[in-house]
Length: 161
Image (cartoon, helix red, strand yellow):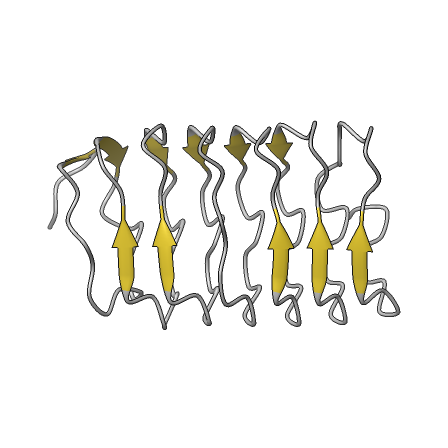
């Protein structure tokens, strides 16, 4: 677990400019956390950074982010929106798994990889927008999509069964 995991008294975080690294799971299971601002200079949202922060309703990602690792926002069940920066190229396994309040997602053109289960169990997900070629498998949006947009091309890494 991370340095501030299970810290129930934290409700809002704005990390200072100059921070360039946040370790895996640093704020996981902070059930009272409602908002977080991550500063410019962070390029990787590490695995499990905000996993199971069930009260999180606002997160600001800087334009410097290029990778969202596995489980980064898993089970942030109150999160109503997320702006994925244009520079992101990879979204990891289960990165937004069970973000049950997320109604829409726009995947930037540069994203070429969505990990398995990345938007699995996003029960309110009704709109997905992206363009370009996406290499993924058929688990990405399982049990999630009410009405999905259409990509220019989806290249599945395994066959539908």
